[in-house]
Length: 526
Ligand code: NAP
Image (cartoon, rainbow, N blue to C red; front, side, top):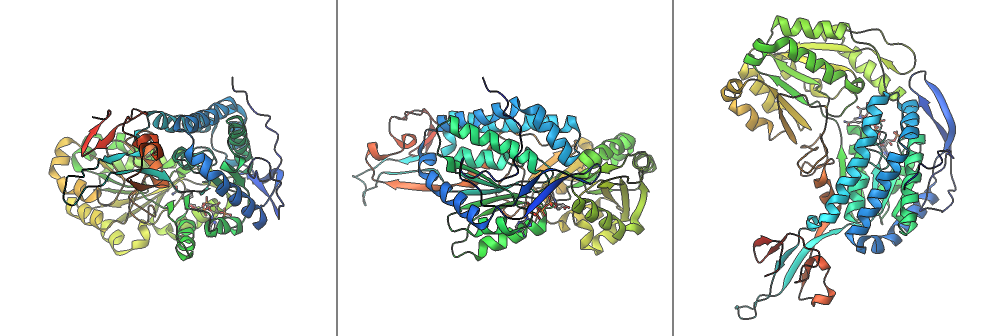
């Protein structure tokens, strides 16, 4: 049975299980509810620590990449069990460091362990390696060689923890789970806003690696309050890929660093998205008040600090909808935001758009607090000012009064890349605006009908991605089992004897997986 670890915090990086950290400057996490620093102090990793963590990861790669998928699945399940067993202390510490409410964090713990188990299931099933086999035909002219391909891991992957998901997008979050599942060692750069939560989860992973008999280098966790450690990791020649969730500025800086390397590497950055919502006329007339309540609940959820927050809403003017939305905003409480920086950027962004503010909630209070705010403008003004489409992270949304469907379609065509787009309407509305869906599918990773975009299912069909600048590479997802493909590359093996082939490619199909055999998908070999 898995038991919770001793939750004592030491404030130092965890390098390859046991390598001591040489350390640098110290910093603290903060309690966003009152703005006060939290103990213990955390010591930033040094460049020597980066070297040790990456060297250990590179050493661990060969054995971790080549153990059976079932063994990696056991490792992922052990981490999931450790997280569940430590749920109470993880929630307590994450609540202190982020001010996210206990029910939200309880759900996040469950999501974190269930996504690790999702990838364990993918490994046990095994077909994710996408085995393709073309058998030899010596009678053909020219003779056809035996050629077999499958996906292989990349090497050490660097993961940047996100501020707004201290568990599900941080140390043992979706990026780490998918990189591990594919067979890559992981080095996490902890987000400085929740170092204690990061250390607790880091200990769980280190413990699971040790119990599974894996080399210590499969996992390291480095702390830093600045950018030195993150930049050094991205530039290190032994690092083969990067995963990041956060600001456009941060993601873009990492993309540029990776592109400037002697050997460039992929950066999977999930950055800003304003998640446009289109409210179509019949739905607006039939259920305007209910839509206003649903929209309000979605854009203030988690203090508006979700990457899928609906930040742009296109609708014609309709008093029942408008009055209900403004009334909901006026009765909204203030929210503690995650960091002082996020609270400051939020207040400044709302202040800059002050002439558009039509309703506001309870005034901000102590700590990193923010007032809920509704902004409104008209379609022509929105179309004339590109900056209005930029993400404002926090509890606000911009309602754009459109003159009709044509203006909505014009606005849709002008959108950049986003994670989601939502259409609220009746079936007749949809039939009347068929062009809208065709435009939106070119702009986003997920098109939603009659639901709100916050709330991201983690399963085999989820796409949490979207064209640039929502992400650095719109061909991928950072949520759901398809995230594993980001940390792989296809390799072909020509003419190898059966004994030298990976089991996934051997004629007898010992893993019993689905394979493309001479052009036909099948589970058995002919
Ligand atoms: P951030 O600035 O993107 O930082 C995320 C992580 O990357 C942190 O560990 C950060 O270190 C590091 N980092 C940032 N720039 C870097 C650089 N140039 N070189 C190396 N490392 C770098 O995000 P944040 O502080 O959490 O929030 C700031 C803003 O990001 C928010 O106001 C919001 O607009 C946006 N955000 C968006 C999402 C989303 O899902 N769309 C999620 C979270 C935040 P430091 O903390 O030391 O800078």
